[in-house]
Amino acid sequence: MRFLAVIIFAIAVIAAAFHFAKPLPGTNFDESFLPKASTVHYVAAGHDATVAGLFWIKGLTELGESYLTGKEYAYLGHVANLVTELDSLFYTPYYFVSGVVPMDTKDTSDFIVLRRGVRLNPDQWRLAVALALRLANGPYPDKKGAADVMRPYFDSPDTTIPEHIHMMYRTFELDAEQTETALEMILNDVMQPRFKKFRSSFYNKTYRVLGYRNKNIKQSADSTVFGEVKKTIDLFSERKISPQMAFNHLLSLKRVDSVKPAEDAKPNEAVADTASVDSLATN
Image (tube, rainbow, N blue to C red; front, side):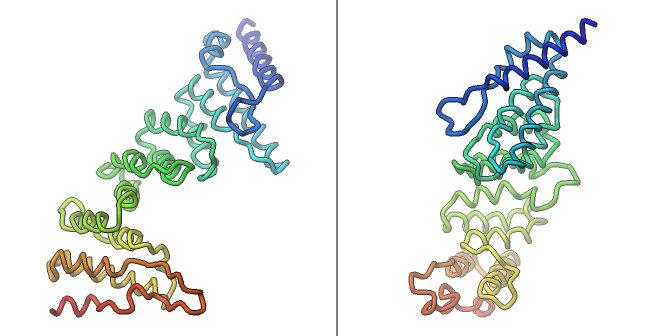
């Protein structure tokens, strides 16, 4: 009976908190006020996990209503933060936030939730990927922070982790560097034994560093560049061309945005006058 009374009282507190909510100052969002976890802890009288579940259900209800009205719900991160402070082993909020929060949203309350989730669930690499992507592509890009999050997964024994996830930290590191520095890092990595099985991933990384994105368009200038990148790295790894030759050729493939009108611009001007890597290998 006493347990039931505590549950009823907790529901009443949650309902009152949401009903008499006021906007948080300085957030530029129409968010409601939530009590501190330390306060809720005393009210819960030892039933933190139960109260956390009630808060989470209420948060999901509010989220569902926002979908019906078409309004942005910038409150999920705050609810998840309170819930996981009360019950840090409640995994659902971590997983849900990682998949629902928009990549470019200005509200970064989900950072706290995801960091807590990664710290308490280091084997859940998908949470780490979500946090890293938010750090790298959020309102305040932090490529170094993203690399730090993903670095521990490079040599993880977890067989469920795809190859590109193992190397994801290096992608963030390279994106944070100037083209010349990034190319030097890539060529250095290609020759290191610990990266030998990841050689194919360096094709994509080099391609990105040079300013290109899509290699799947057939008979396009970008696909031609990707082919040159692949040949260069293969020849370099097989020691058929020197590091300086490989570096110079890759740098010559760097994408240059044309300032000419679209009808006057020539496709792939950046590589029009560049010798093929095949000719370099024969010199």
